[in-house]
Figure 1 (cartoon, rainbow, N blue to C red):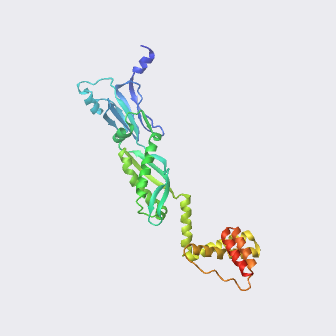
Figure 2 (spheres, helix red, strand yellow):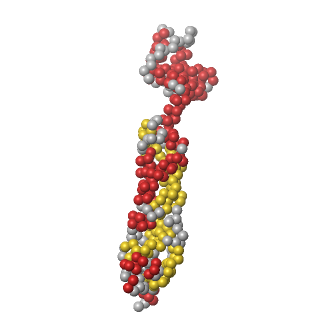
Figure 3 (cartoon, rainbow, N blue to C red):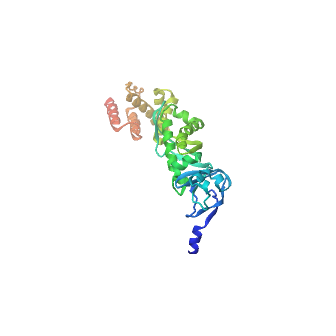
Length: 330
């Protein structure tokens, strides 16, 4: 027998594990070595140690220092018939579990969630935030998540947790019971609501969701643009005022492009033309305003041309109005 064979067969008399960042559970590495009768077992604060015999859960140890003997290994003693004589050394699989809170974890919706909003109808909502959890029920976690693995890390578990969060959020927000504007305005209450929705999935794996926060709740850019437009309409009150509002914007644009007094005149004509165009688009048919006494037809054509240049009217509309004005002076 060589020296390495001797070392691989030596008895284990000190069992201890120091938590490693991001590690949730480990199978204590003994490399087929056996545990000495009277070995010292250390379970640190925030840890739980489980002993298994041939895949069957035997004894559990909470934080403390233990001398392993028949008195504190009752299940293993029964399984191995130690009541008829303690066997030393003995074999057992030992698993350590960290029950410390895992904090600062991020979650987010990879795709927008479609919700039926009371005020705006169907909306696609994105949400992002943070959460934390801890192992609450070690036996449940051992069966559902750890199994026979040698090590389970936070990185192994996070995709599954984020999937459960996304499902819970879709279910909670999809009911449409709370309007989007109310959701965005009261994120603290929504965070508590979503934490309650997430908790059952976590509990099924032996976990507890210790905190859950929404840090951002938003709509896709194109949806937000439509809402901004609708907000502008609500601000001006009714469609007639909205037309005037749009006309005023056109006046400012035309004046800036043309400059001086001529630009101001073109802007005023732009406002009139845009107002008439929008009114006709919703079924109204207002009569064209009569030309002011003595107004020159050529000046009107020039103004119309400026409107056509800035896109306020189409080429067809310009040609038709130009023909009408020219017919008046023949």
